[in-house]
Image 1: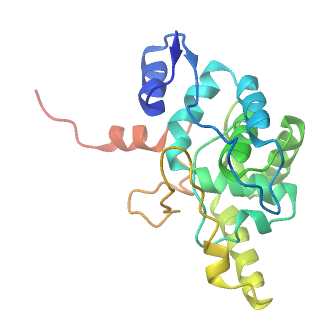
Image 2: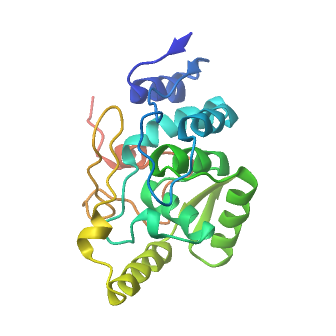
Length: 216
């Protein structure tokens, strides 16, 4: 079966019921105008990155998709020159534990920049060794609070060099479905930097576990 429907519905059904489906992410980057710092042939690269994902990774990406966004307190993604810092940006901007393949897909699909899985894996390991990220399970990595602080320091340095706040904030992305609204750790429900989450689950699932259960 081919699921070209609400990606969140598809992902939940897969995660909770474990059925096999040909998961399809219903976006198209063919008409995205090229800008400096972006990779060419976005749609072809997105499709290849999607095909590298396992069914579990596809379901995870679809579930995490609406969580990803620009980070208001960090530099615009297009201004980041280091491959390691770009991987860190994806981890911080998603706020979920990711595999190298998921990082590759989200980077090209959301931030229009290509990275190969081997590079992503190496940079994620480097971020962990630097304390900017941590492992949450086999093959999964999440950003830490020092990771966010590193990006914020980069933004402060950019401001001292004369990069305007308005210029950094103009890095919004418009998909086929909506324009991103951003909230990076400012919400009272944010679990960013919390070492108790996620452990192979989404933050909202952990939040559900913490809510008082109704008595029968």
